[in-house]
Length: 417
Figure 1 (cartoon, rainbow, N blue to C red):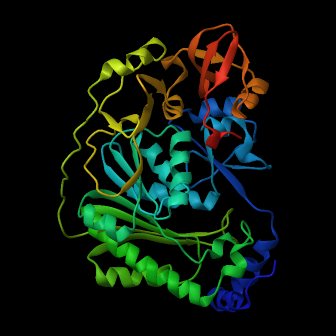
Figure 2 (cartoon, rainbow, N blue to C red):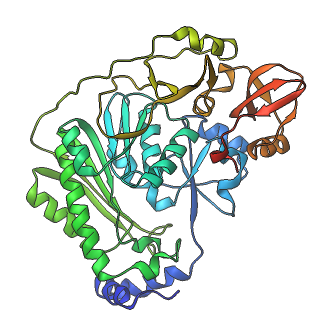
Figure 3 (cartoon, rainbow, N blue to C red):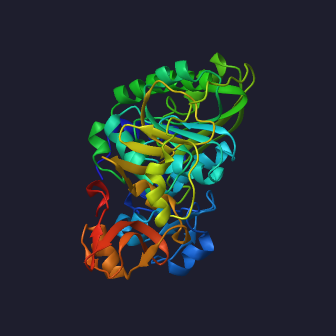
């Protein structure tokens, strides 16, 4: 691996006699991991059906080292039963200690690994904002939130400073997984190597400082902030935290750098801080605007759970998180998209399918071959009639509408494999 010369010179000074161990880590095989999605399945239940040998990751109770290729191409992945995540990247989110009932923000969230970790910690309670400034990446984030069946998340696309003006002293917990120079990504993504430069390190550090300032503005008194990167540069890590603490009234609770020669992973950095000043502000709540529940009544024929906090947004009906505030930033997703409104009828949304358990709707259980075909958009023979939730091993894949002996596929094209 042809690593940047300036990077190697700095790391040799930074690590001293441990430099050779660090360098040798780049010749080791890439370490892979998955995190079991406990919003859908327990770890013991997943172990019964897992196609992988699972070795626990100590930093995350639901995380496991796995081997093999195609981790994102299995039926279980499409069902949202697990999330593919680099093992050392699992370390920061648990330090936030997010709990049910809290207001939590993942400020730089795409593609959603750490944010969906937080969702698991919250167990569906409270409200979780997942923000990403880049719209194309925000769409990927929203898709992962849907796949994992997260019900209490709001996915936004806004600059941190604009979000800070909207949510001053609002959040109890904030994760800042900051955009960085990506030094911990060299082995995983070779394209990151030619993009690296000292100028990029300094530019990243400047942007990180601005993002942290916005996060501090949004944090409540006594609130916790976790800052993390996948880089080894002091300017982006320890020195960044040192400068932040000089500027803001926070207590440092923990700080740790994970090097790839010391852990089974590609490396990470995190710092945990607590705000020691300010207050806690509320926002005006959004009034739920969908009253025509009769339009949704046909869903009761095949879905056995009710929906609260209904709101019509565009041509769709959402079940919003409890205590959803009014917001004035671009929003891609809020809670669960229940139905698509088409003329005088409502059709169930794929988001709803991914948020249900098998006992909460009329289901058709299929074998693995049929499941894989269904995920590719294929139909299959079925003698039933009406809307059915397709399941494999008891876990949802999506909707089909059965008529004339055929189950018509209703998986959106964007999520097919």
